[in-house]
Image 1 (cartoon, rainbow, N blue to C red):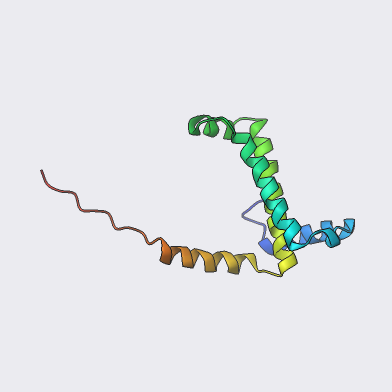
Image 2: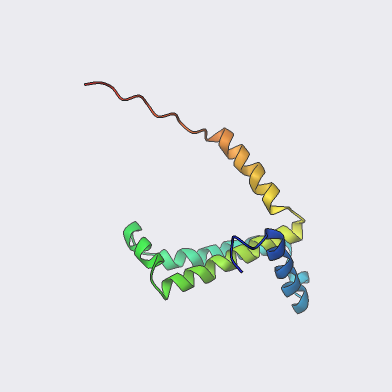
Amino acid sequence: MNDQQTRVADLKAAIAAFTRARGWEPFFSPKNLAMSIAIEAAELMEVFQWVDNAEARTLAGANPHRDRMADELADVMIYCLTLANALDLDVSTSIARKMEANGRKYPVEPPSPMTEQ
């Protein structure tokens, strides 16, 4: 499974099946899922705690840190997709709509002309 060959719908279905098989649906309210996203995001941030930007980039390429980052990011994404399932949201539509709104809010600034000297 990789990003180029996996559809968001496939990920959502796999996560839903995993959740259903364990009987976790009653615990996965939108509130609990939103809290879980924040908790897992904090665990991802913890990997970078107390390092500067250069050190963070070095950590990102070095195991076991890279594996931990991948695991924590996966946890965040799993909870995000679980929340999308719980709210019956289409993630791709939501992202496209938000990117369009962000484009209006943050337009690309044209490069400023260089002054002659």
